[in-house]
Length: 272
Image (cartoon, rainbow, N blue to C red; front, side):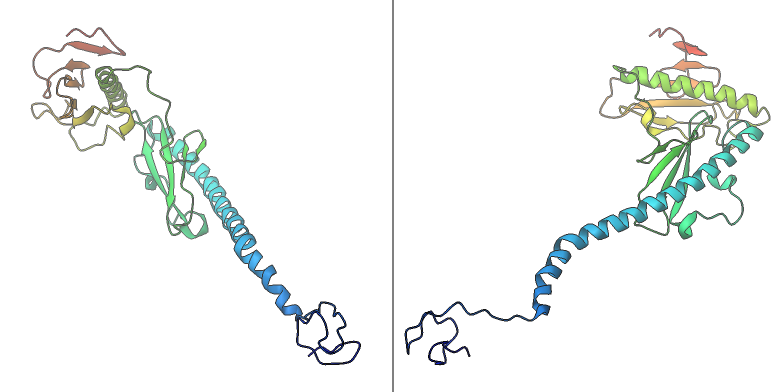
């Protein structure tokens, strides 16, 4: 308990003047253990500095894992290019080119998915989460270009393209691919179970259409096919667009009747 400096009377804490002699008393300082001073410092670090530190640390870890995965994917691209040199097209499944026991870095933190273009002359490698859910997914195309989203975004479709024109564009692309595929594989048939179509990117098909028949034999002839784009129920006024292995274009979902146009390297006049 503090005392008055004049008369030595014991004073309660916070006394302004001595009740005995009236001497004014200075504000009494409270001695605090130094440990108590650490509390506000610690609280400030935990509430502000620590989260920022952890975010920076784990962010750096994610970036490092993504960089190591990208380096491994560039090696896979070279394997795909070697495959292309032997077969004239990229593989359908990435496992077809990977050596036995291959695993992505960081104990398989990422897994790879391959999406091949419709004509087989391009592909996209998606880096998806594997054994580590705390990774950033991304993609890489056959040129080694990295995209921060999966699917290797493609160039925008033609501006102002109508749904029917889009369906014709897709049908024409399917025919051109079929011609190239058959030239590379003359001993195979369209109905033999071979995935001659490769992977058709869904974003190339107009939203108003869906694929109704793909790689189906016509009249049970495995050397023929009828690829059909059919409008969905919300757009019944749009025409069916179908194409055969001969490049004939029909408005019938079984490629029957008289074709309305012919594909010859480029689509000729649309005669409806």
